Length: 142
Image 1 (cartoon, rainbow, N blue to C red):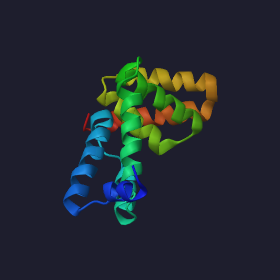
Image 2: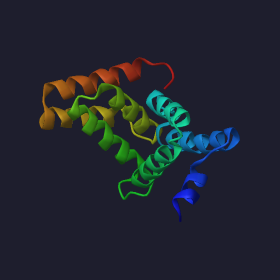
Image 3: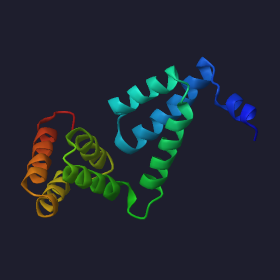
């Protein structure tokens, strides 16, 4: 494919952009139950700077890793939650804790992940994990 042909493929009309961004949003919604604010912001940036192919590629890769994986969606979300606790990344850990629940995990499993984080990453990771579970249990939308 020539550079001109690739540029033409990346150019979007408002209708095409809307359809393509909705497909990206749908992938996040299917794995997390929501479209995170950061994704919404990145899609806005992609629109403003004509970079939608990057977001489409990222969403496609995430979909493969999360849905075509031997671990299954529930375990994948629990793994993401634990890794993010270990990194101290509160906001994305919250997103993936809710994603785990959306994929069928229980609050007890979230607590188990937080307990594992205590061993692998210390009290700060455990405290963050339990704080997230407490907040989730206090939210009436569950």
